[in-house]
Amino acid sequence: MSLPDNPSEPASPPSSPDASIAPAASDKRKRILDACTPIPNGPRLVELATSAGGLVDDEVRQRAWPILLGYESSNGAGSVDNPTWHALAIHKDEHQVRLDVGRSFIYYPKNESEPQLDRRKMELSSVITQVLRTYPMLSYFQGFHDIVQVFLLVLGVDAAPTAVSHLSLLRIRDFMLPSLSPSLAHLRLLPSILQAADPRLCRHLSHTQPFFALAATLTLYAHEIQEYGDIARLFDFFLAHSAVVSVYFFAVIVLSRREELFEIPADEPEMLHSVLSKLPKPLDLEALITRTMSLYQEFPPERLPFRAWTRISAFSVLKTTQGSPHHQTLDTGVELFEKQVSQLHREQMLDKHKALLWKYRRPVGRAGFAIFVAVFAFWLRRGGFESYAALTLRRLWGTVRFFGFRPD
Image 1 (tube, one colour):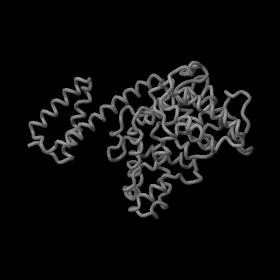
Image 2 (cartoon, rainbow, N blue to C red):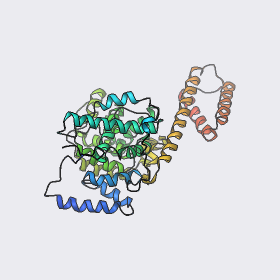
Image 3 (cartoon, rainbow, N blue to C red):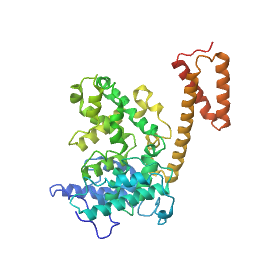
């Protein structure tokens, strides 16, 4: 595959459809483009992106992905094109970006020379840096470059920054906050999904923390899947649905390995973690996507056991992409980001007070506890957290009961 003469053009598709399926692909291609114009038909586009084969090819994706991300590339709405971004302040994570970009384009595109790959890397660095400098509150994470390189190959260097900005603020915002805890909240849904679908398997894995799913879910599987056509097709599916679908997709992979996992003793969590942290090869993407949709419809997030969904922040992408997320704007993403950061600060404050309460649990009696609660509530209200005060104090009381403390 050779680079286009114009470096801003996206990569050529790595392969052409087989001649035997070309007529069917051509018909689907037309249906997708019809759903994109003149007025985008979101529900129809979601249906086509989910169905077998996804959005068919990159030329179609260039029209469809922006719509699924909430903007229209044809009229420039939602664009973050900023020719002066080079003059913006250097982002704190740019050193790590350079290191990761140097390790990019390992599996695709294929058959390119070193100079061609070097230019790809320069373009990748440019896209990531533009997004980070334009939205400096975003925190880069290792693996973000795996996601962005797919967008670069599909959309091209000129169109990719706008798409990646929408993705970062509206679809994977939880991963770009200053704390890892919102990312881990995604993983904590996994045991609940498994419990709903297969209680016996869930019990078998109960001694294994779900951190084995972190690399895959954090990078939308771009770090794990080595075939360009496969990851582009999987992105069709993920962009068409809410962010939680990525977690359901991993649950389906775990369920598909049921027999293999039962062969490993439950009291060997390290072995189970090692097996689960590596995706099986090859992946039957179409079968997995079909099963993911069935699992999601049978056990929707709000019906998961262990009250798992109630523990998810209202500002998390897991919830803000539910329903019809395809009309959210970048300003909405910035606002939600700020709300999540404020919530994280409050939770950190609560954790400090829990630790303080535990430290002084013996000397504190009924009077001391009452004073502590009153002062803490006053502090919360003074800080403008009236609605948060009641919830926080309920959590504090739950902590007190958990630790076995009873005021005299």
